[in-house]
Amino acid sequence: MPRTWNESFDFYLATIEGHPLSILLDLSAAEHGPLEGHPKRALFRVPIDDSGDDGLPTAEAAEGLASVEDTLVASLAESDGIYVGRTLGTSLALFFFYVPAAVTLEALEAKAVAGATVRLADDAEWLDYFEFLFPPLKQLHSILNRRLLRLLDEHGDNLDETRDL
Image 1: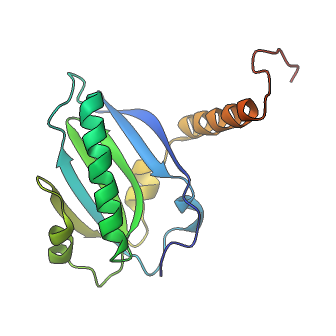
Image 2: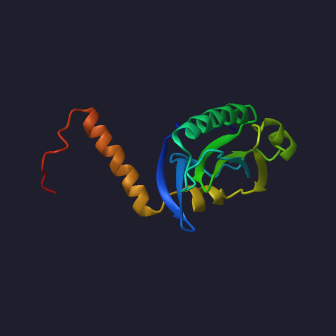
Image 3: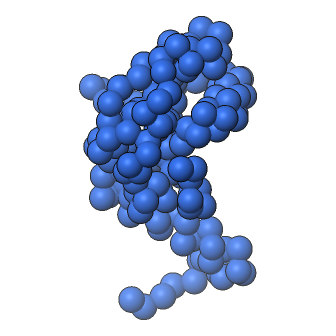
């Protein structure tokens, strides 16, 4: 069963064990997942060769990782994989997909980009998505507020104007 919703990717920043982490996820997946037909979580781990002292990729490395991301998303779509998000931090990029039960580790390894390692685990409840990738309430509000401000700006609203609430 392929994805039946429109993707709605956004990002937020978090701290894991004292290290900054950039998290990108499809917020719309929360309204539809978990999907019975996608009970396995595929995780692609890609080292970030060019990262700063904070473990986040440099601008140049981020461009390369965007290309890796595009390649993985296109490749996993052939196996009915659903891309739900990624993390960047601690000199490592993690790309998260949910795949049908019939997908094997060997099949995923054949789709992996150079330097990537692959992990496949049962996760029928999509716990990695809901408990790790999905933002805490404060960050979710920030994402939604950022989207609202962008929408108001696109429609010509004067964002500097004082308003009574």
